[in-house]
Image 1 (cartoon, rainbow, N blue to C red):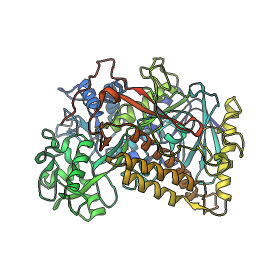
Image 2: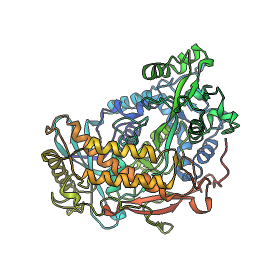
Image 3: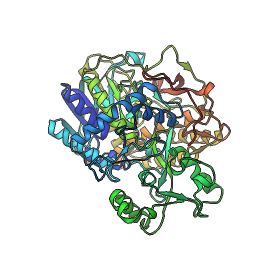
Image 4: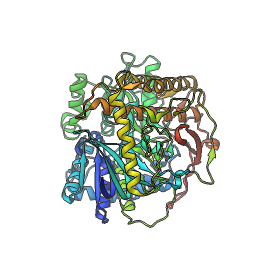
Length: 625
């Protein structure tokens, strides 16, 4: 067993910043990640980092834009933390050597982005995330922080008190992809989940193949509530054939959207009379699909994004990477012709419930970045707010886990006096209800520690740190052994494809109740099929079939949670649109949807959104652009 003060799971932007902050505050830190840090999906982020840096701008304006963009479902203390601290964190990146794009006078450049009232998006060409990732990884190497790359964390070691709020997270279990070894990692002070997104629940996504919702699923099964899972962002400009992202920076620089009739439809059809292409992402995505649905799409699938008028010099200086993407994946020369684009799954606003320091209701367990929900984005994330979320909340969680913070949080976690029970909205059983014992097979919980191969409770008998981690290791060894030794059954790829198909067809930009219920039935059938899953590769070395099989279990839990929240929320707010409920219902729905695992029988409940910040109280207003 390996022992550290703080263990960071994942090594993208949030994980790297958390590790640096914890180490700077005296903690002995290790990073455990299924990818090498510079292969993390942060590297695919193109657009930029929102920070109020210039005269005429202020963090309070950034906070208002963020709250408005969230459709008033974000929690104000988290929003104010993000916008107040982003300038400091952005300057820190520059001081560490990040190669920001600059104006002719040498000042870091900033450009307009969707939903912003001021051009406050700093950037590094169209490869901002790539530069951020390498800059922070250099700092990790410089500080000598231990990195276990290609170690896949598959289970949390959490004690077994009845109430999640009484539990402790004492470490993690990881599978060494190179050797097949299963090892326990003990954390004296905290485990920080920084596992990224969950886009692989859809078949058209900007997310990498590795983005399978691992952290969300593990925390959920360990007892931590997950929050606002129905809030999925569909980016308006992805390439039709692959889902590869075309940066919002193209529209920030002046790129124009046209339909098949050559109309600049954002203005001509009244979708966003003031901001046009720079309305928030949910507005633009719905507009594009509406054009397609009304017969004004190109090849009944997409619209055109044109940047030719920007000129070759400007495009090569600020958007060169976009030219390569369009040419490589669509065969289009962006200097000579418009690019085809359509909405694609891009980001999850919901995730593991945390406070504004990244702490969950389970003692010693934190979550940051896209896998977490503070909630800083509410019902819709503004472009340029994801990267500062990584640095701001990564740094906050790192400091808190290292014991350097004694402030009381303003955002509560877990069930409290303001919470309310929700009704069952699913036409089928959820979770592991009515399924054969999970602990005896491929559905082994993968959440808390399990005492034996035959157990189906997902519980931990031990109470000491080493004992809890040791039991979790034994439980994971039993699960992997079962998967590798099973002779015949269903391949995980069939199950995953079924989930992706129903999520893409039924839980997309436009949602209706009957389709959402169909998705829940399909997911239930996929769960039943997963009971018979088998791994075709019996080896221990670089067994990607085994890794993908475990990931598919996580996708099942995540897909179900997204869909349950979408059925329950019968209103239109931010990225969530319901056909028969096309109005925002502030009297009923200024609250977060919460889902608790409850040892395999998920329960829906709610808690109010926190609109009162330290700076001001944000009164809901009509959101228009």
